[in-house]
Amino acid sequence: MLGKKIKKKITLEDFIDYYMEGNMQRFLRKHKNQYPFQLTYSVTFKHLRKSSKKMYKELMSKDIYPNRMNTIMNIFITLDKHFSIGFTSKGWNDYLVIEDELGDIIRDYMDKIRGHQFKFNRGKLNNSLPTKKEALKEQKARGFIDINDWDDYNPKFAHIISNIDSDLYYPRNIPTNSTQSQAPGAFKAFPYVAQGWIGVQGWTRIHIPT
Image (cartoon, rainbow, N blue to C red; front, side):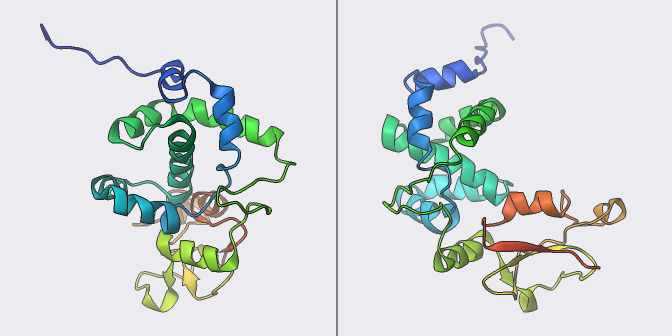
């Protein structure tokens, strides 16, 4: 259409220049401390709800699984702390364009230093896993519920269960075969992929019916 401005699609290079001051290596060095943090729903969103209810509501309306959301929020925490880039709708949309490329770079870097002990931003030195109390709170914040309160539970499907409270389930029936995957409301992935999307590392397990 004549006179209409066409927005340029952001590239990875654009993102690095704008959000990381052109210094990807500095971002990676800073991000290694935030990378293993898993308490997005119980901690990060608690602060976001207080600082920006609009942004919090917008994120809660997104159909994004917990660990992907956790990855995104950890990246913006690093950008906010070390590059003075706050979390905004623009930042969110820009990130989604380059998500796969940036994710590959971050994973490659973290794999190289995986043997090192990560440090939480809260000052703890440990193996990066949340405590039992923290994990239980995070599971509930992610949507885990008591199995007795889950009306659609189907024992023929697989399920993600808390290692802390064996009655605490993520309320999705997860298919174990192609036939089950066609069932109405079935999860979009098979059990161990689903675990990677949802589980709190070290504190959840997969139950597959025999």
